[in-house]
Image (cartoon, rainbow, N blue to C red; front, top):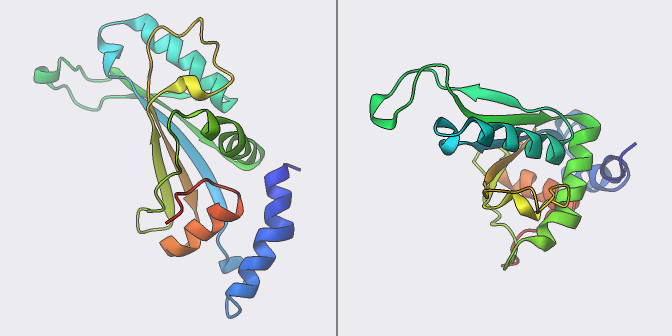
Length: 179
């Protein structure tokens, strides 16, 4: 069992149960999945660019990403139908907890001028954030990186409110700004 899953079962879940006494055990918030995505706007010009970031994202996530393709052609953007425009990975269960553990304890201290993430959710109990540079991940070999690429990370929970989501993520040790 992953370290964070054990922490959820032994510490976070009982604390949430004490705080929300009128709730059923199955109504307590839980982390469902983590989605990591990259938008590749340079992919139109260079096919090797896609393969490089495919390799990097698979190293970061621990599984092979899915290529997202455009649905329509837009001539002003030089975009054709079914052209690769991004990559995404959905992490669940053990890989999800392992990624969150590495992200909170190893990656965030390596972010330049990091003071914490804003504690603002999407209103439906999920939390999204963006990273400007993939080089903060220790899995990436810095000698092989040709271009920096940002990514979006979405933490999807079963929380009904933003407060429950923030409280759950703080229990996991997610680094939020102190206000």
